[in-house]
Image 1: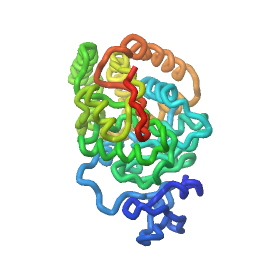
Image 2 (image 1 turned 135 degrees about the vertical axis):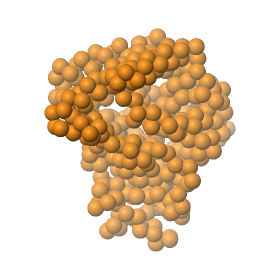
Image 3 (image 1 turned 180 degrees about the vertical axis):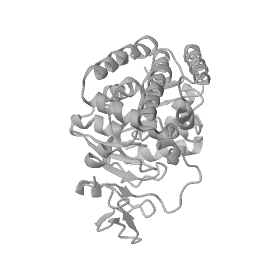
Length: 357
């Protein structure tokens, strides 16, 4: 979707001038550059800078999307529901909020939160957007280090599973840009992790060792998950470094909850992957596509999403499993670990900074 309202906030990434509507998408009145609206008017604006940054994410790789998980949005469940519930608790979205999703991926988090009445704009470097997001949200193809957005245009922002993919310089540039596009006292919710783990992380490591053992036995397939994590740079050393990085970009860490997903890792890295592997195998045998693993996984995921949308037995069983995964927040949320949820507050000039609680 490209709404008329988006033209009050989008600007040329080079000239920093507000863009104007154009038959092809948008145009810059200063440099006369014309910005397209995606292939065949796909429903988003391509506002990437002329000169691409040398450092790029593997999210651009088509191989990462062969399972087509980005194409449609299922209800939030398992780890996705935990992250989204934390987002809502930390940001308290209302109909008065103008929100930007920084590194929006498929755009599913915006779809899940449309019931709040807030207005949403999603920015990502790659156009693997879900159908529901294209139909209901303003989507921009852009670089988070050079946002094509006006100063102070948004009251709130979030960035999920993004910061760990950035180098220290890219992280500083991204957070500085986030600070610029937020209004005074604006809030940024992030889910990411630091390099230094706490003692509880041994539980996650045990689960991961078990998952790799099961993979060697041919009971599950973790290749896509490894590819997703292969460009993790983990620029934040520890939680003290988090405060320094945030302050350098004009933020204070206002609230934080730690997240050691011991139960979550077992469910998502073992139970879910095993179920997916079994269903994909059945799909391949039924359709005669044993030689095309990607096609089988795509069909398995599509079938699972259809069942979840029906809110039947599969949905409620998965909701029950999600409830068990909440133990990771309830039991370990006060113990420092690598992963965390945090709300960063834009620091106003001469305003005192607060510490996390």
